[in-house]
Length: 111
Length: 114
Image 1 (cartoon, helix red, strand yellow):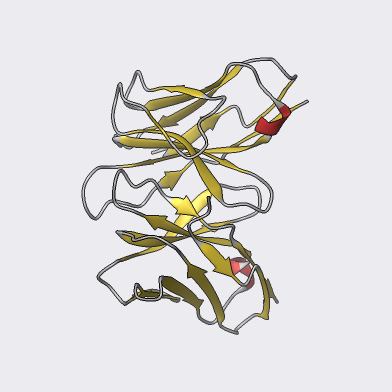
Image 2 (cartoon, one colour):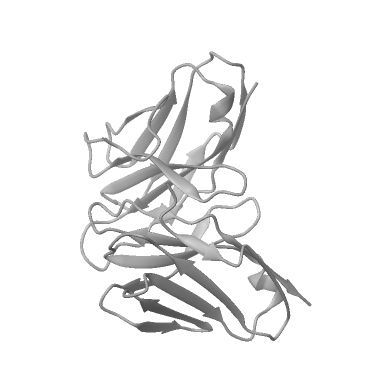
């Protein structure tokens, strides 16, 4: 079963614009992570936010977490063509870090 | 460091054949995981290991077996491959401890079962 569900499924923006991706989940978590996957490659960790945190920044990335709504959002500011990839949220229950992934969001950034 | 490596990169099997996928990591990580990714889907956990000599079932373990005889290696076996096991398989690892929950992924093995 998919714990995390991302929204939208696909997003196409112009270079320089901001991209916002949302993730909803169902059960309690220890932390929530966002990963990026370039076509035909493995996943790369982007950012992790813990259940007691509300917002976190890393470079052009900003992630928020609302545990009362069981939702998270990932904002990529000033997007670049190189940001074109699939993005996945993954929930971590804290026990052995058995991550549960959403289906992913396909982001296309047009030059 | 090579990080997490997977062997082979691509394989074609006939239904009923067996094979073993190898995952190796050189980061001295305790935890290792096997996932499968199907088109339009996120990753689903097959099996995982919390240390050398240990294995446990994930979300979709049926049809697969695993072994962790050495800390750096995690093997995924298919005893009798089925077309439903056509997928891309990813291995991941992470160290123990709070603050180390990030998983490091290999490049994947693409498996086609005819």
